[in-house]
Amino acid sequence: MLSAAPRLIVATRNAHKTAEIRSMLGGRFEVVDATAFPEFPEIEETGTTFLENARLKAEGISRLIDGWVLSDDSGLEVDALGGAPGVWSSSYGGEEGNNEKNNARLMTEMAGKTERGGRFVCTMVLAKDGKERANFSGAVEGDIIDEPRGSEGFGYDPLFIPTGYDRTFSELGDAVKNTLSHRSRALSQITAWLDINF
Ligand code: ITT
Image 1 (tube, rainbow, N blue to C red):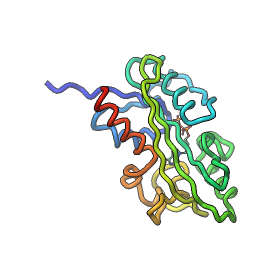
Image 2: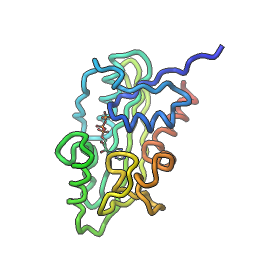
Image 3: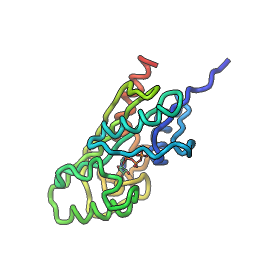
Image 4: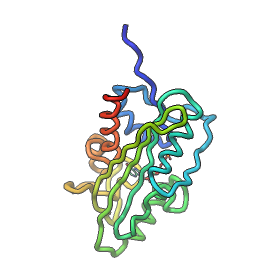
């Protein structure tokens, strides 16, 4: 008899993150995110690093529910801005999760700058019974452009051209993005870890 895929709860309410994670791990897990549990409280991201915030989210949710929980804390580090927006990427424009305002602020801050390099960073934590069991990070280098291009993806994707390409993540689309993104690089380590430990 076939057994059902084990459930993996992703400690996020960002539907784009969930879709990317599901497309990469969905063959192996039933991927469910925090939107399926409206009773879960919002976890305050009080850390100053991606790892601290990823830990808060994964451990916080795994105290409330049985099974494996995966969190994702991610953002864009821009060299000419001293690493900003970094862990504060989702509220850079002044309003949590407002991609248009975030991109508008990034364009303003980068206006006239010749140094355009930066990277997307993603740290993920796997937790069970309220405790971290493993963490993984991935990054992808690239350049920030002046004007948004493309319609796919989310967040800063329309302003980011990964190194070696001449189109933004939004123009390249999820099929390409998911082969080289910060998130996919963290997830491929998780897949390897699960092969050994799950
Ligand atoms: P959760 O905390 O619920 O997971 P969130 O969107 O608030 O959702 P973060 O605190 O990790 O997540 O902030 C991530 C922000 O970084 C996100 O809102 C985008 O602005 C940016 N970001 C992260 N990954 C990205 C990607 O793949 N493409 C574009 N922007 C990304």
